[in-house]
Length: 462
Image (cartoon, rainbow, N blue to C red; front, side):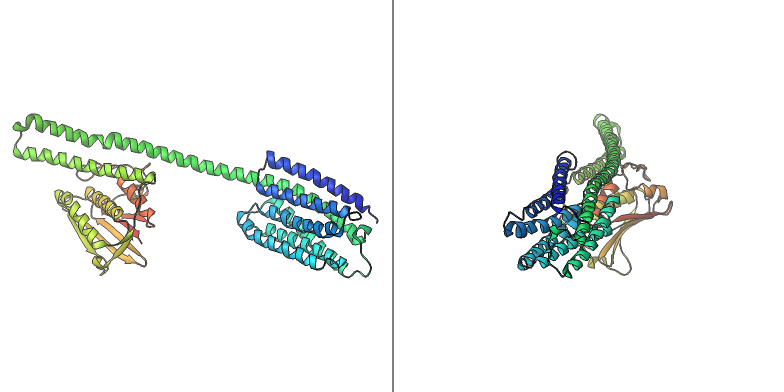
C-alpha cells in the first residue's frame, strides 16, 4: 500500500488549521478556560512542525529537523498537559514533570541529531511517554468522566503502537526515509488520523461534560445557599422577636414600677418599696445580660469579635464568676459551688483560651442553670483534664429537659424559650452564643439532661 505522504501531511495541516479555528471559537464564546487555549497552542506547534517537515527539500537542516522536532516534542507535552489541567491537583503535579521531560527529550534529540533513525525513535518515545502518562492519569483519576475514559483508552492504544513502531524502526536494516512510506509508517498515518480525530472531538465533548458537571455542582451550591439564607432569615426574625418582645418586657417592668414609686412612694411600706426596687434591679440586670449577648452575637456574626487566647488558670476565673453570679443564686436560695472531679484539683488546671470568652460562656451557663433550678437547689461548676483538652461542666439538679428540647437547644431558628422556675424569661440567645464562641476556639459544647433530674452543660477547650 503506497500513500502520498506530502498530500496527507497537507491534509493534516488543513485539518489542524480548521481545529485551531474551531477551538478558538469554543474558547472565546463557550469554554473560556485557559487549558483550552493551551490545547490550541499544542495543535499550533504540531502544525508548525508538519509545515517545516513538508518543506524539508528547500529548508536547511536547522529548521526541518532541529526546530521542527522542538515543536513536535513540545506539542505532545502541551496537548496532554492541557487535557489533564481540568484537575487542579493533577495540573500542579504535571507542570514541572512535563517541562523537564520535554527539555530532556529535546536535548537527547540534539545530541543524536546526526543519527537519522535514533532521532526519530527519540521523537516516537517522547510521544509514547506523554500520551502514556495522559492515558494513565485519565483512567485512574477519581473524577470520572465518560469522555475522559474514551480519550484515555485512545491515548493508551496510541502509546502502545508508538512503542511497537519504535522497536520496528530500531531493527530496520536499510536506509530509512519517512516520506518513502514503509508499511509501519502507513499504519502510523492511518492510526494517527484516527487518534487525532478521537482526541479532538473527545476533548470538546469532555469540556461539555465538565461544564455540565460544574452546572450540577453550582445548582447544589445554590440550593445549599438558599437553605442557608432561609436559616438566616429565620434567625433574623428570631432576633427581631427578641428585640421587640424580650427587650420590651423588662423595660415595661422598669418603667411601670419606677413610675409607681415616683408617684405613690408614700403609699407603700418599706417592704413593698424594697420589693419593687428588687423587680426593677432584676429587670435591669436581665436586660443588660440580653443586650450584651445580642451585641456579642452580632459581633460574632460580622467577624468583629476578635479572640486572643492565652494560658490561664481556671481557679481564678471560677472564683470570679461564682462571686458575680452568687447574688442571683442566693435570691433563689440556690447553692452555687465549685467542685473538683476525679481527684483533680481545679487550681492546677490551665486552659488555652480567650479569658473574656470563657467568662461570658460561664456567666451564661450559670445564669441558665439558676433560671431552671428550684429554690434550695444546687449548681456545681467543675473541670477536669481529658488528654490534651479540658472539660468544663456546669451542672444543676433543676427541672431538666426532654430529648426534643435538647435537639433544638443550640438552634436559634427552632429554639423555644421556656419560663424559669421563678417565671424568669429568656431568649435562648445565650446558649447559641456559647456554642459559637466555643467552636471558634476548637472546642465543642453539649448537654446531658433528663426531665425532672437536672442538666449538665459541658464544653471542652484546648
